[in-house]
Length: 162
Image (cartoon, rainbow, N blue to C red; front, side, top):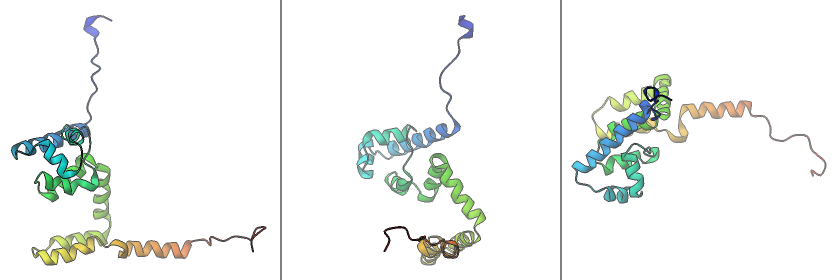
């Protein structure tokens, strides 16, 4: 192949990968400006230095169930950091949550009520509505559907049944 036709085979990074790298760089700069060694953050979070380094390079996502812990370890504002991590590292989860808030009147109303007061106690009480656990209307409707439509699990007796 002539030299003027050399093809660059360097992999092109996706926009998602570039965002992960940007978040990782942000965490690295935050940690450095706070004077926290990588080892300190790793120990605080219960991960290896290598794993934290991979996150700060954008090569590994922050585990979804540990986003709050990372926010606290790096002294970052929780709501803002959670949103950043969801959008950049767990976009499918973010889209699902947004879809719920956009399409579920019960959740949208609960979110609006939660954010419509500056009273911390009232906000905490209203936040429980957003996290109803096993008592939401949606779950009630699901359970009713199951009860109305579930086929019996027994069938005709077979040889050997008593």
